[in-house]
Length: 68
Image 1 (tube, rainbow, N blue to C red):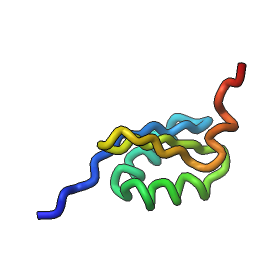
Image 2: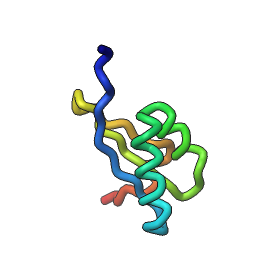
Image 3: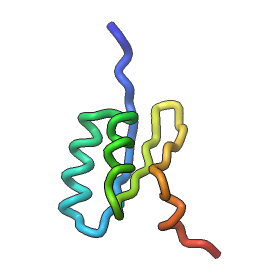
Image 4: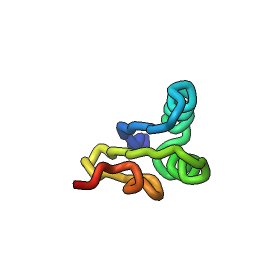
């Protein structure tokens, strides 16, 4: 049996209902396809953390980070 990919993630969006729906969808799609979906949407950002503790950020994630 093939090992199933495990990951954790956070979705950031202006409307919580969007984030909730995308969270469920991205969980079902997995890392690659979930990230592709997030990258197609304006104003939506994600960080996926894979089971090897690698962080995968969506495109333009740095736009929402607080810079000191």
